[in-house]
Image (tube, rainbow, N blue to C red; front, side, top):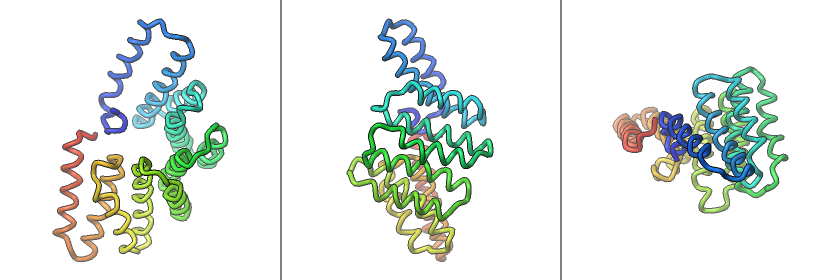
Length: 230
C-alpha cells in the first residue's frame, strides 16, 4: 500500500519492521523465501530512486529468483526496476529484453499480465525518447485491458498515449486521453494522474485558455497533498 500510494519515505522503516517480525516467526522456509522475494522488489525500488544501480539489479534479480509465478504482479515490478537499472547503465537492448523476452518466463499468459508487461515497456520507450515504440506498447496495453479491475493499468497507458499525441502536436487526441485519466482522480496511480493533469493543463494553455489550465494544475497539487503522495 505504501508503494501504491507513493509513500516511499515510509517504506524503509516498514520493511525493517517486517524483517524483524519474520525473524521472530518460525514460518516454513518456502513462505519465508517468498516474503523475502517481495521485500527484495521493494528494496530494489528504493535503490533505483536513490540511483544505486548495482544494488537495484541485485535486489530485483533476487526477487525474480525467489518469487513464485503466481505472484506475477511482484515479478512484474521486479522487471520494472531491473530493466530501468539496465537502461540507466546504458544497456538499452538488455532492458528491453528483460521486459519483452522476460514475459515468456511467466507461467500465466492472461491479458492482465500482458497489459502490465506492456505498461512496463512504456517507461523504457519514454526514457529512450522512442515515441513510435511508446505508442505501440501503450496501444497494446489498452487493448489487453478487457476487465473492469484493470482500469488503473489502462488509464496509465492512456497517459502515455496522451504524451505521444501532445509531442506530435495532435492536441485534440492528447486532450481526449488525458481527460480520460483526470476525470477519475482516485482510480489511478498517482503519477499517472499528475502527469495527465499536467498535460491537460498545457493543452488548455496552448488553446488560449490559461484559466482552465490553472484550474487543472491546482487540482493536481491538491490531489498529491491530500493523498500524501511523495
